[in-house]
Amino acid sequence: MRAALSQYAVDIQMTPATLEALMASGYALSAFKAVQTTVNGAAPLVWYQTSRLLMTTSITWQEQYQAYASTSQIIAHGMIRPNSTTDIGLGQTAQVGANGAMTATDGGTPAAISILNQASQPWTCGVSQVVENQANPVCAVPLYGNMLDVMAPVEQVLLMLSAMSVNTGAVIYQAYAPGVLIDLRGAAQRTVQFDINNGWSWDSGTWARSVASNTDLVPLLIQQWGDEWASPLSPRRRSRSESDYRDRHSGPTISKPRAFRLSSTPPSSASRRSGATPILVPGVVTA
Image (cartoon, rainbow, N blue to C red):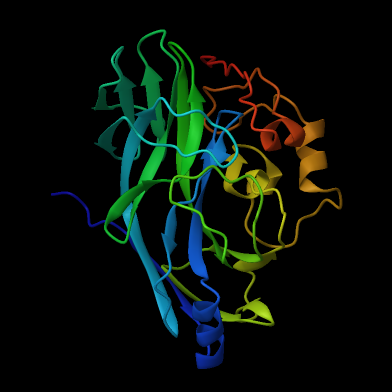
């Protein structure tokens, strides 16, 4: 018998005055989901978006996944539209054929989703996760010919409220509004508050942190195995900026899973924001 899927929820509470102001200004709620991966060049996507705001707005999701392959390019503000998908579980591998057809098979990195390209045709690939009964992509990753990409969903979500028009599947590299990054690895439900003038708040727990407008989202949402920035949301030990840390550490060795090591250099912030698609070839090394 299949084990029950874990359920998660975040409640966003606001006063009537805040709700009225948000609705009058055309604000909508956007959510992003974090992943860990062995591949550089990945991008975060808008995972969920709604303009239906309430005094308590709830977002619910579960550990139900799909792997996808797409011909969409990974460019800033571009849309990622899956061309083929397959239901998949953690520890499985999605095989992508020459025509893009996908098949999920047993065997792969534990607690992660692997996507194997069986032909020379490059793709954009990634993981979708069910949110509010709809499987939406959470990330976009370059998949080169005959290569293997590995990614693991992380129960961290970033929320933003903004009047900016965005759609699910959009490639977003910078925060376009003040946000809150919430860690649900220690609980299945969290509650935060939003005030139109004071922004996001929560109890005194270390399970959340504020994210300022224009923050680079890649270090927060595209986490590298073995990277200290992938640790929980407690204050970080280094004083240097996230982009400085990432730019100084090219080709990190992946400690988990041990069978993979990167041989490419991360893209610069300038190249991502210009819309250029980085040419990064991840390597696969057998331990």
